[in-house]
Length: 428
Image (cartoon, helix red, strand yellow):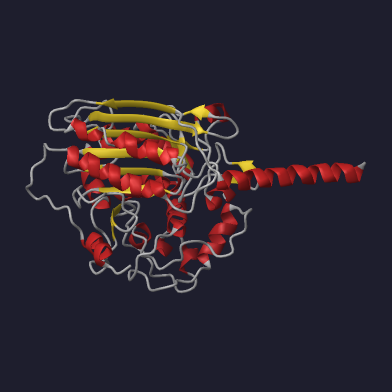
C-alpha cells in the first residue's frame, strides 16, 4: 500500500514536470483584456500614442509576459492609460485590471530606500559622504572602513552584486553578519557594479538611524503622506486576487510574496526588494517628484512642514549625475540616468531618470518635459524567458512618448549621454 502511494506521488511529480516542460516548449498566453485611454491635450501628438498598444499586444501574443498596465502622465495630467492581457494565467486565467498590484522588485530601491535616505539627510541625521562604518561600525571589517554611503547609492562601493553562498533560508542578523565580512572585489569609487548588497545595507542604515523597521518607516514617512494606499511591504492576504503572481518556484507559485530570493529569505522586508504597488500609486509618486516633493492635495504656497515629503533640492541631488566623471555608466543617488539598464530610449533628455525591476516593472521620469511613464508587467509569470523582451518594449514606448511631446523648449535640452554613445559604438 505504501509503495503504491509513493508511486502515485512520483507520477504526480513527473506529470507536473512534464507539463511545465511542455508549456516551456509551447508557451501560449491568452489575449485577455484591452482597454486604452488616450487624452487629447495641447502639446501632445496623441496620434503617436496609438503605437503603444501594438507593441504590448505583440509581446503578449508571443508569450513574453501575460499582461501589462501602462500609465503615462504629462504636466500633471494622464495622457495614456492602457490595460492589456491577464494579471495571471496560473492557477486560473484572470484578466488584467488597472488596479492590479505588482511585485516591484528593484523599484523598491528608489520608491522606498532612496527617499528614506534623503529624508534622513534633510534632517541632518546622515551625511552620504561619511563612511558606512560611521553608522554601522561592524561594516568596517575586511578593509571596508572607507566605503561611503554615496558609493552604496551609486553602486560604486566595490561590493559584489550578491552575497556569495547565501542560504535559501536565512535571517536578517545572519545576512548582515555575512555582509559585514565581505571583502571588496575592486576599490570603492572606481567601477559601477549594480549590487543588491548595497541596498540591503542602506535599508539597515535607515533602521539604525530612524529606529524603525524599513517597512514601517516607508509606510509612515513616504507611502502614507503621498496617499499611496496600495503600496506596502508584505501585502495583506485579502488583496491576493488583485496581485499579479510571479514565478513558479520549487512547485509553489509566488503570489503575494516577494519574488526576489534574498528579500524572500529575509521575510519579505529588505532594502533591495519587497515593495508591492499599482500604477496609480507609482504615478502619484512620480508626479510628486516632478512637483518638487509636494504632497497631493497641498498648495504650492503652503509653508507647513507637512506640505512636502522631500524638498526640491534633495530630489535634484538624487536624480542628477553622482557617479565619478570618468565612468560611462551614469547614475544618480539610487536612480538610473544613463547606464546599460536605462529604459530612457534615445529621445528623452539626459536629465531624465528612472529604474526597473526584475519582475517586469519600470518607472521613468523626465523633469524637462514634465512627463513620467509607468510600465508594469509580470514577466516572470509563470517563469521568465531567457530573452527579456520587456526591456526593448520599454525603450520603444519611451521613444513613442518622448516623440509625442511637442510643448518643450530646446533651451538647455540635451538628450545624448556619454553612456549611450559608448554602448552604441562598442563592438559587439
